[in-house]
Image 1 (tube, rainbow, N blue to C red):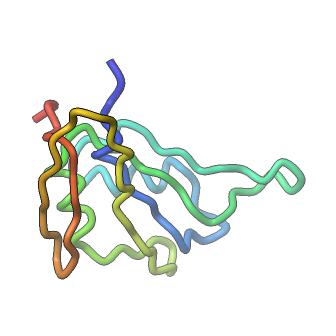
Image 2 (image 1 turned 60 degrees about the vertical axis):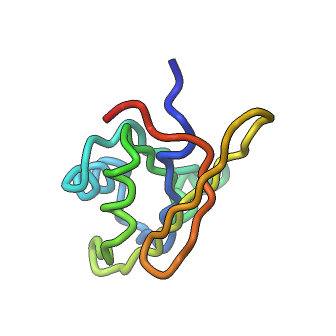
Length: 110
């Protein structure tokens, strides 16, 4: 069973010496990290400076989004990845900080 895209976030501003294990270790304090994906440039072999982090629970994601992150001296920007909703999915709205998000379903992994 695939995890809902609802529990996924974008992380930007990652320094050149930060790896996926550093991100996993940092974000683990907010909850269980299901996956970390850092796209790699095929020409240089280095990451592009951003990543996608997926949690197993919406509550953990919200906790991570509410915090200002700094790893290896680089302040990271975080953003909720808005899920693509299919037909028949009920939308509801949630507020995180000063932002309003429309979300299609609850995370069933709590």
